[in-house]
Length: 124
Image (cartoon, rainbow, N blue to C red; front, side):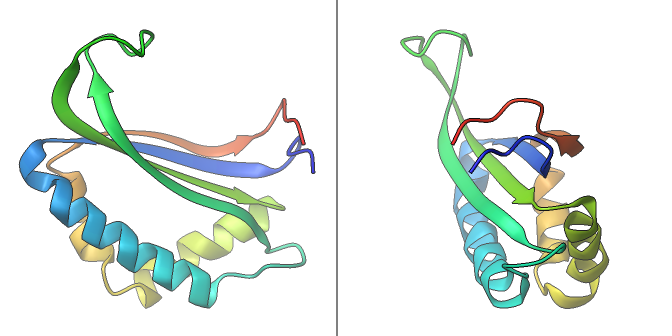
């Protein structure tokens, strides 16, 4: 399935070592909520959901560079249409019990967000 034209949000959280366990807990809660509540077909469909975790590197373009000691969590959600992402943002503050914990935890991290992105290239 090509992702061209699909709507995506990607958020990178770079957190200090003492915040890693809370990040793992929050994303476990988030995944459980997402699986239980999000549409899988139609205009509101969430097509892909991934959380990855890995070390932040001193040189982000050199995979052999030394780790900084921080950990990166990358959240990636792909939706059929903008309406799916809009539905997510409408529901999350009302339904996901850990949204406050996410906001508090994110305040301890460096956060980079690509909101409402539309895939311009995509394979398979």
